[in-house]
Image 1 (cartoon, rainbow, N blue to C red):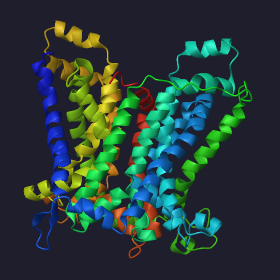
Image 2 (cartoon, rainbow, N blue to C red):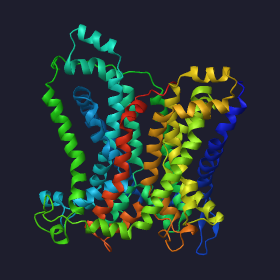
Image 3 (cartoon, helix red, strand yellow):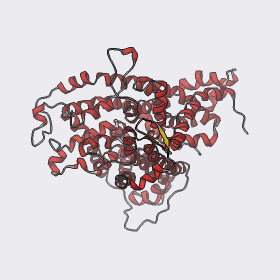
Image 4 (cartoon, helix red, strand yellow):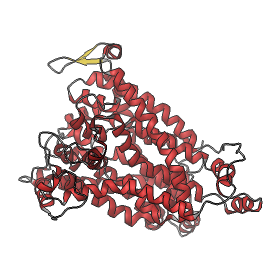
Length: 563
């Protein structure tokens, strides 16, 4: 058994302790809780498998399972079908357009859902005006929103695989007279098949656990029409039926475990597809204008919803209800933004503060752990597999046990509740990012520092960490954006906005995502306000993506080594 250096163990201990406490305990606790029901007085009564037997009696469950399967399979299939030609076109026209294509992936999910539901609104939505169909109650609208957000990431993964194909192979293919579509199907497609499979499984996980579009869409379509297992489990928890909610979450955990196993195997796979290419496939390069046209069509799909929400945010109330919908505001007004900065200020303060604090905590925990895993094989393959497993599991599975834990601590509806729990969302993805980064980190730096008498603790904090800016910048972007757009934890652990009259109490912790959801309610619907809030919530995402754009491809282009 390999001996662990005490300094490597020391710098990894905080992250390991957090992961063990806040992930393993909730997973086990959910199964135990699923064996109980709650009486009207709030007492838990042991009922064995009764919650699981209720699956057969639940009048909504069959529809909800159908919805779940649709989201789970339709999203990745559509993503892959469209991501492959877009990735090929990007390789031909250059990666300068990648920044614009990646925008939807970094916009908060609640904002993305609001954009689309404003477009299909039956009162003033341009999509409704063109189709004369109320799409708000369609489950395919949820699929559309999922595809809009996940297609850029699927494209990035496949594109990274394409550009990483060795030039020697490309030159050999050219020497053999292969070009265009024939070369793609015979050479490129088999070589990027692991990336395609990885993207497919990741998007399947996205579709399985989609939540935010359903949360926004339910206020437009009505209850249970759009529900999947994730939203239904949360609704049961919120309605005071924790045992049944835990049983549904156990079912979801089994599904996520199966997908996690597939995901882990695809990441470590070196198997490539072999295809027989029909003779009619052209053996010539497609014209450059065709690739540019493909990129332009995709950009229109990605950018039109963003334009529409800006358009609505700048309109006057009279212009908002004009028929046909105005394609641009005749009289620009910033009144909606003034209103949102006034009413939404407590939510913005909480979101910005908690996201910033969680980003710092995440980097503090993750960077030494990822370095130890990549450079010193700390935890071996088992720890790496567990991190990947956490990447493939939804944060929803933690809410019931952690709610009880936070209630015991007396910090429900405070900043502390979010600060304590947000790393659950951000540690897995940022650990994987930094692990890939440190796999390529020059070992000579550590060796030279140790020859100068430094122990590994000093080597990391004085030499390695200051040289890790590019990796840390990408990890920070993901940590901040996951925190900025978080919805499930704030919904579960808070119930009022930040109390500005008692700022140092840090009580009241509803976030800006909740604020947008409240604005989308039919009772308080403010079309211009929702649009302005969506624009405001997108600004940090776009700024961070712009500054970190040059490092995204490098990180996602990493193979991650052997698992």
